[in-house]
Image 1: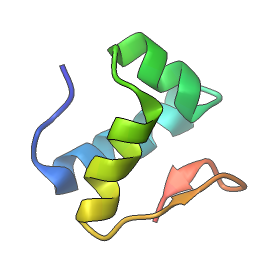
Image 2: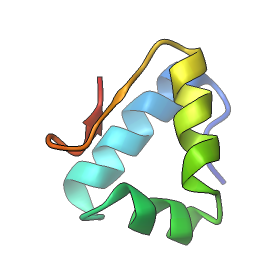
Image 3: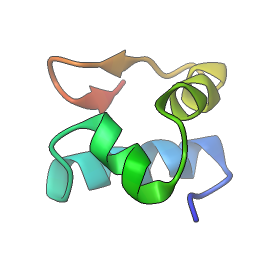
Length: 57
């Protein structure tokens, strides 16, 4: 289960991408959430995904 608070989710996702997953798609598949849904949740909180850096900013 992913954190519901967008700021905790931001931190959690970036940590997972840094430490455990090579792509956002792999993280989302493991978490059972569509990539677009995760991106949308974080965009609503003002974060953008940087594919080159593999993290939200």
